[in-house]
Amino acid sequence: MKAFIFITVFFFLCRNAQPVSGGPEKPSCPQEVTLRQLGLVDVRDVMPGVVVDLRYSGTNNFLKKDIYGCLDVAFVQPEVGIKLKKACEILSKLRPELRFCVYDAGRPKWAQQALWDHIDKPEHVKHVYVANPKKGSIHNYGAAVDLTLVDAKGVVVDMGTPYDFFGLEAQPRCEEQMVKKGVLSRSQVNNRKLLRKIMVQAGFLSITSEWWHFNSCSLASAKKKYAVLP
Ligand SMILES: [Zn+2]
Image (cartoon, rainbow, N blue to C red; front, side, top):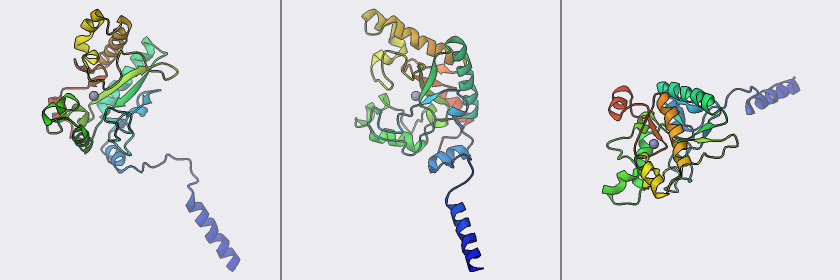
């Protein structure tokens, strides 16, 4: 009888030590749990084949600091997710060999503040690098996305500058001038135009200062429609 009890207890302990089902792993990052609970959408669930290279979750960014910590999921509002899905459909028709690579998406308020605090510049020039947390960024509402295109091997399409390049070369409003000067090639600008065309057709707004950034709506509209991400 003792042996039976021992075997039974041992069996239960073993069962409980390792989950036997093949279900999805529960996220252990509290910030990620919060965003999922708020109903935000993981871009991997709506963008087939997307590469997620969340630059502020790690040190491969202009600050060389890991701002997001354990948060390594690119989240957006559900209606932004619908537009991203549409963007993938357009891309697959126009250039089936290419995929999107997402650099940033929903950025919680605490992360916006951390970015701001880590910029080692005078207060009045910090806004050149990142939106003032007091004003807020559309990223803070899960309604903006930073992204580029990659080929089948995952190699980034040449857009003329890397992500978060703080020079005129990265600004769509300066592209023609940069081509004339020979700083950007026509094909680099055409690659940006392809990205913009797809995103605009999918319902996003491009901006004049960063080729990689796209808004789903204006900041005023985001503030009306959504709560800032905690
Ligand atoms: Zn952005």
